[in-house]
Image (cartoon, rainbow, N blue to C red):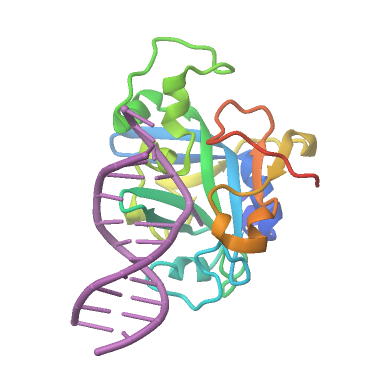
Length: 213
DNA sequence: GAGTTGATCACT
DNA sequence: GTGATCAACTCT
């Protein structure tokens, strides 16, 4: 699948397809990459949990209203940053939050950025705690990848920060869904099963609670 | 369980 | 313009 095909999908299909992609940042100091293993869809303007709920573009959210495939990065709690992929055509403010990666490249650089001590060797299927802490969490992965507001609105099919197809689709049975994290304030929308993750991944940001689908 | 700061919104 | 409130989180 090409990024052009990815970006033309409707929001939930695109969220699922993102699990077939790696996120790559080819920075001057080195390249880091990881497979996307957990995402959440936000479907403004009718989704109470979305930053674009009910509204017109603001200085913070304008990227969500633009074309699909761009980065919507926001600052939260005054100290963290999170990265979304904009979905849906211009004017429809949907976005997909990247919540966790399974690191594939540049682990030492990630560890340096995250100020974590990396073990000498480990089984990728059973990563030790420090390895999970690299990229399991939306703000963690942004920090590990060396990304920040410079990439606000950046087209994610374009180096140095881009999405790369892994070469195979993930079987539908390997994808689980459940309610999104920390959106309790969103009323009825809080229960919608718009969080998707790769079943069995050790890199989930928080344990998955599956919805019946 | 606390930290920390930008954005938003309801007001002047 | 001003002040109150809150936030799609992380680390201990």
